[in-house]
Length: 153
Image 1 (cartoon, rainbow, N blue to C red):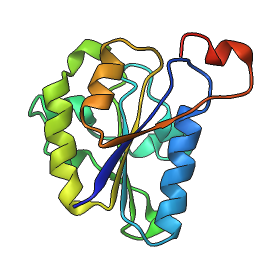
Image 2 (tube, one colour):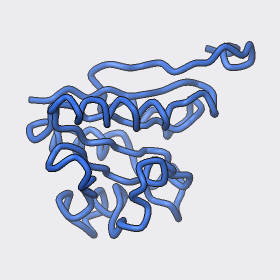
Image 3 (cartoon, one colour):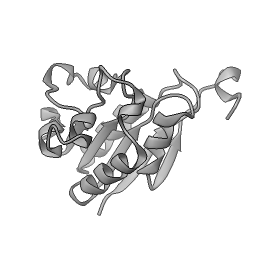
């Protein structure tokens, strides 16, 4: 059974998505099977960072609402054989399209098949944040050296 980690920060622009992509690809390079979940609903970018943006057919909201099966929404990164997958965020909806229970259910469905589920959290501490942390076993907190990235943390 895999572990789920949320990559989070109260602030935007501190490297959550970049860290998610880099940690995920590093783990895949070490032979671990990884699913990267983008939960920045409406503002997804993990697909672009990974170079998978032109391969998205379904997203996490499609899975949560039953429009697609989880296996249909997972995008395989072919550079890493069968080791790195992306579950993209919805682009044309808002953060209220998902709730905590749906995220927990999806994460629990992923964990038996992956060594790691890395959840790329949206900025802030509103509903998107609450959804992202609900499915996590642990957190990785991103920050940078600028004073304003620490205020409010």
